[in-house]
Image 1 (cartoon, rainbow, N blue to C red):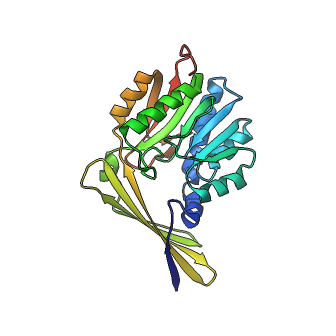
Image 2 (tube, rainbow, N blue to C red):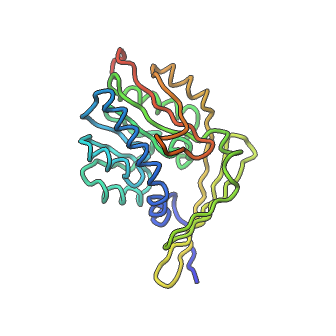
Length: 253
């Protein structure tokens, strides 16, 4: 028997599920970022985590001696992050509109720039946040992020099924009439005593062309590499990662 309700984006149920299911990617991204920071002799300073989620990456950075400021729009995610990484600073704001403090690194892991949780997410808004990231970084600073590309439509299975002892999740990936949009319908069944509670969420993603984005970040003054794995951990099919370095000759701000 189950109860049924809808939720805000990344409500309490899906946030806990995501915390378990996304942990491997987040930890691998943290390991890559820490490795790149140390290779650049950036062993202290602030890392700003856009779309910080449940604080997995923040925890690993704090353990290595970095200060962390995390930004997310989900109340439930931020509650998990605050519990996991109480030494960090967390803010509930739009990733596209937030102020980014001076940082040695900025990261946005897990298709953060694709989600249409903010209705103002368009090409111009992405350009503005990329510019703010560049301004916030010190010379040699690192910008690590990943995006869902138009290939996500062809490579993502129409339906995905995930299950643990305490929850089951069905994800339906729906291709929009326009090739640069994708919709995810997510139904989660979470054990609540002898019953299961069903929670539905619908997420819309604006798919981003990686070559166009590469041109933009190059124009801003980044050197970068593109990849499909965080170390040994592959990104989801149709996603691409970027590790970008601000030129040392660039003046902050």
